[in-house]
Length: 248
Length: 296
Image 1 (cartoon, one colour):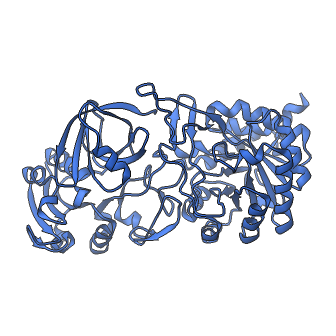
Image 2 (tube, chains in turn green, brown):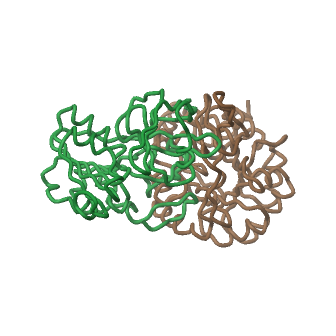
Image 3 (tube, rainbow over the protein chains, first blue to last red):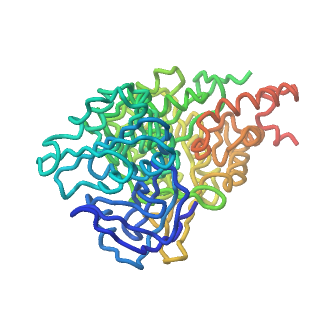
């Protein structure tokens, strides 16, 4: 598909560094799927859908900074949704979220909750102000919080809240790769799903720029079962935009 | 039934992964081999690490795909490891390489150890590289000869269709000592977003691949088959077994598949099995197919 024109209808400041951009266009979304967001004249970047008509973005580089300069009534081009989202299970589920990783997990929580799953969320961030979508998770189930600086909840990393993981039927995880690797190393790989972030170019499974070994993050993922990731370079290396290996 | 010998390489079937597709990591090349590819061609590698053009770098249009990746690559200095990983599955691994001069091409070719080289003198949107050197027959001949002097591996030269007469470039490659030519690279093309007037690709223009370019590629292969003594490898818009057969009838000794891999990584196995049934039914061999259209 060519990019669809999407007009920004509302911008919400979620945290000091994270904003949600709502569009006039809705997408049929499986939580975990992403869209390619084209900030015309600047760049096109992959973003998880955080609502069926919104993306939630952290200001990290030139493209996201350009996005932060847009106002309501401005527009972007959108391709997608692309990729394979979360496989939503019933029963007791645990969400492990780090920073802006809450963006795809919040719609997952809402969908799984509506289907009757019992949900617990481990929500981590650098500091209290950076906790994302806490309210959305609290409406659905129990939330346990960790912050790097101890300003709220447990003082430390969200992975330190993992203790009764064996009691859950499925674990869903999104956040910095180093944190996801810690989760993968601790849980039964078959019972966990991870949403990966990689440098994506084509978004449609052709160019191979986003490959984790033989896995295409844009097409086979971005959500992968832990047992698929176990034997790969996930958590060890990523590739930069040139395709060079970079240690995680 | 489908195995061939091409430029000295034994290949289990004439269906290969094209350059620039799933070709950056050894693991992704292996995955194409597991999907049934007879050989795999890597992403083009050059002298220095290169991040390529800004996104959007690929977009689907009505009749195919438009791309301007901009030759992103980790440089040949960081690439032998990926080639070695790709070789683990036992299919020939062809290194696609690009440079701005004969010296650069030979430095790269002298340093890598693939089963064959494919010289990219045909990328349509890289300033100073690709088609900018590949449109001049004298330069193509020089580059081919320079690479021939530094390696004993077979050399394939990938040609651009964005010239008045592709045969002239093909003949230049042959004079330079090429073992085969590969035709075609993408066709220069562009798309514009009518909501804003912006060209969609970050590079503004790029190259078209996919279904739309197949008839263009068939004609190029047909012409090259008549003009050259060396084998022609066909590529451009193949998405099923009928396309592969058509290329062979035009004169392709083997074919490469690119864009269609996005939707089906198992496409090589699928095409192989359909081709076998078709050939059995017709009682034709691969030798019967090659250049059949030229005898009619």
